[in-house]
Length: 451
Image (tube, rainbow, N blue to C red; front, side):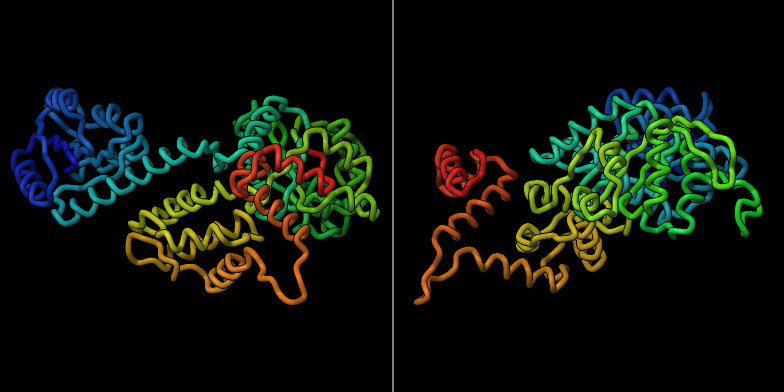
């Protein structure tokens, strides 16, 4: 269906020239000379885009921008004389897609209009994808594993003073969920401060977190506020918390207990209102047992634990993630890529994704960069991914050899793979294996799993 364009300008020559050029390009053009005339056209047939002169006999084109722009997502391009360029720039701040200064070339008009419509199409596609996938913030997932995480994130966001511990492998999206919890809570408009604990040199950990007084040590030439103070009123996200030194762990424990801290070299306690979200890819119980992490801090942190599943346990979300990343990077790189072909998607779904969502995101970004048409093909995927995916696809059932086969071991492995593919849903795992839920339960008991 042809795009409808409203041209609002009281200069008949401009309207005629623009109409003829855009009509040849396949656009359906409506013309108006006044704000009132534009409103009448919009009431009859809302346009897909609008070219709006700023100065008009009965008002300004910005009035139409306010009605068509961000609320209704109709891209508006302002047409302006040199004397009103500043007005056009102001219009950009209020949602205009671009502006053209008179006299403008028709080639530039076409390019500007095409870009505006493409950006709008991308925005609408992203919104539709978010609605379809149940995306909250930047978190994508409609399968049972991620629905559980998202529901729990919403619940803990309401308790905006409670400490949250995010657990999961590298690349599962712990930082994204931390930001989601912050945005959903009462602190959404206050600071969100991220501290990557592994990036802090041990000698500077305490100073970076809690600050220092002037003269506290050789290089402390001025007073420094720590990140705990910077986050006052908001959220402090401690990523890779298992990397903190034992000394800083002790000071953090005190802060979590009383929200009180003392700067390095200071003599007075300071109190702040900060919510702490911590994250780690380590198994903290093992770190405690090994003596690398304080047991009392561990129990203080795990008030509200949320475990993010690895991507291999939420395979039903992979197509949604791929589509979201394709849309994002196509818009970022100015490409008109719409889809991933069946072969490429099969390889992506068959891969194990040890780097989880972060690895998938990087692979899709690379594929979009290497794709020159409207579809991502298998050839744009990394060779090692293709080899591993194809290799794993070919190992489904081992052949019987003269040495024999451990049937119980094979049954156990297939049961585990089916449950993994079904994200723990026993009925779905049964469907994959041609078994009933009751039969699945019996086999779990057989292998010593509480059914």
